[in-house]
Length: 244
Ligand code: SF4
View 1 (cartoon, protein in one colour):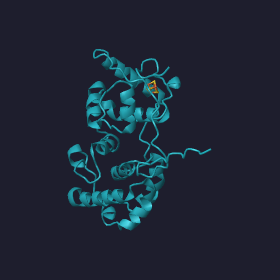
View 2 (tube, helix red, strand yellow):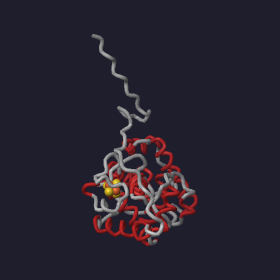
View 3 (cartoon, rainbow, N blue to C red):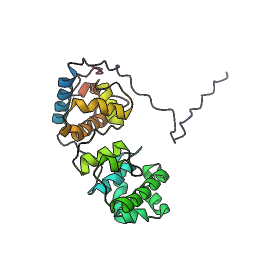
View 4 (spheres, helix red, strand yellow):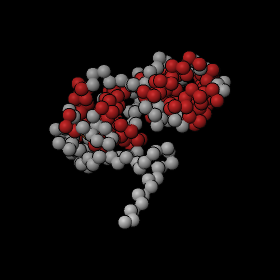
C-alpha cells in the first residue's frame, strides 16, 4: 500500500526548524467597563507588586551606555544570552569612542550568538560615533535626543530613561507587556505606541518603570505566550482572559 508522503514543513526563513508555534487558545479579552478600569488596573499593579517584590530589568549593566548596548543586543534575543556576551563586550569596548572605532569583524564575533549580529554591529558602531560627535561620548537623558541615536527607538529609550536615569517618560512595551496587557484587558491595541498610550493614564507616572518590569516578570513566569498558567496566576479571579 502506498503511503502518503508527509508534507514538508516550511520555516519562516529565520532559521526555524518547523512551523511557527501556535499560541494556546486564550479567551479573547473583554473590555473592562470604562468606569471600572482605573481601580482594576491599580488592583492588577498591587497584586503583581506583591508577587514580584524584586522585579527589575534582567539585563546586567553598570552605566547608561552599557544598558543602551545591552538593550540593543536584546532585540530578538533572551536577556540571559545577552548577559553571557556583555562582560567581554564591555571589557573590549568600554567607551563610546572605543565602540565608534571598533573593527566590525571583532564586534560581530563577540555578539554573534545574540542573532542579527550584522545589523546590531552597525547600530553599536553608529551609536558610538553619534555619542562621540554629539554628546561628548555620554548617553543623553532625554527622549528627544535618545530616539535620534542609531539603534534606539522609543522602547529602548524608555528602558534607558526608566532604569539608568530613573525618569518615567513612558512605559516600555515589549512583547511580554503587549501580550499580558492585552490578555488583562488593559488595551485592545496591537501597536506598541498605542498600547503605551492606553497604559499611561491608568497608572501613576512614578510607577511606569516598575509596571513594565512587573508585566515582563509575569509574562516570562506565568502568563507565557504559548500557554498561560492561569491556574497559578494571582490575577485569575479578575483577568477577563483567565481559563480557570
Ligand atoms: S489569568 Fe493570568 S495567566 Fe491567565 S491570561 Fe490572565 S494574566 Fe495571563
